[in-house]
Length: 88
Image (cartoon, rainbow, N blue to C red; front, side, top):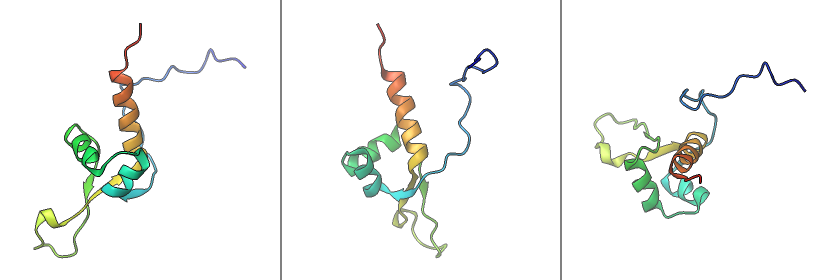
């Protein structure tokens, strides 16, 4: 197979919209095999998440759950792990 016309991937380019499951903090923790508190720590470090929409616009913000796209979170974790890896 001739690979001379295949472009080298650019890791600085944003990923296209990734498809994954939408899960809550507990489910994401199970997927990664960590405690839910670890997911909160990762959120503070940039883990992508969104607040669950609340049908009541007057509801307190802290009453809504955080939701996560599994594909985006796995990509974030892989990139973060690769950046932290040391190659000799």
